[in-house]
Image (cartoon, rainbow, N blue to C red):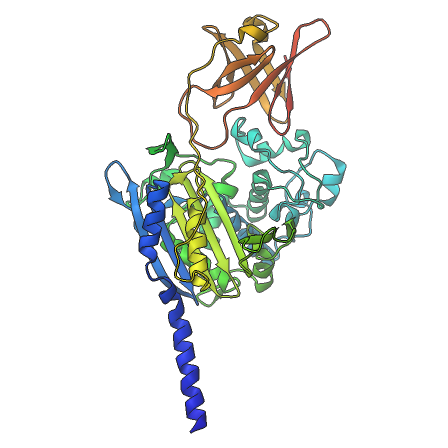
Length: 494
């Protein structure tokens, strides 16, 4: 009789545990809607996976604000840097197939690959690119402002691009590092990054509505347009078209498709009984392979601490629980993908709001509910929303600190081997900086210093406002241009 009684208690406890996530999600719709109203968000899609089952999947708001078309769980959004975990997974698949090793140098797989220092050439490995310990850091201007015809041509710039951090011994986030990984994948597989993503990940994971192309996305019936906040109101903005940087930012997906991505990671590389990744690679990918900030919490209620990075994933302690996550942002879209491996649940939040922490606020709120820490109280948060960049009226020459030369003297072509050539022209009393794909007006600050401003709408890919400083030679002539890229890059006047 006692055995039956204990068995009933065990069954009742298991039933309660199974129901707990659904109980914690009571009122979730209305809380999401309240947060969206506070952010003036256009559209959002949310999905939750628990114990290998989708327990929540819903769209909110609009994918097309102008025509009032609603977001659904199938609506496709750009996921931005959440693409990095897909590229990392491809590396894991190639390792599983004995086609590469993480401890090998990238130059083993890419012909003539060379970094800017002997130390980088000697010690950087494939794994260092995965966990951002290569020392490359931010080199975004080199491929956004000066695009190359293909990835291998872009990598020819590496010998002239100075390091941003100490290789191996420091952590510095690097989109360029994932471009290198994409090139490795293509060289080893002899297939395009787009094709192998589809073959090895999207197809096996049944992510049938996901793709790596804006053009492909626009052919779908259910996709979202990109939006950004400006002066407190949402506005439609331009799509960002990834090119050589696809391995770090190009995937477009839906909340429903991303649930299968969550399931694979929560099962340590297995999906529908098939080993997509090895268990060891999946575990390492979700581990703190590199330490970002190991400091203890500053205050008792601090949500996150002990920040690390694995392979395409951030790691941290969240309210005493081990959390794996990554954010993503491309022009008009932001996302947050979250895993709690020990508790076996994951969350995906996809948004069409630019320059906002909305996906993180929603994901944190749901995480606290799923962990049973919400105490049935509304989630408290601090909102961060920034205006998108737009053309503005240009101030006239600063008459108190006039330029040392006529505007025509600054005109000409300025070159740097790691970046490319900037053409400075003068039109109607203003200087303009012309790049291969962008044109900015230079607003005078003081003497030989200017700052770039937009003259037309552009994708919100990077901050377009750079400091420009013209340096003079011994004879007083305009000799070079220093642009505020990577701490200051010198372009020599030709």
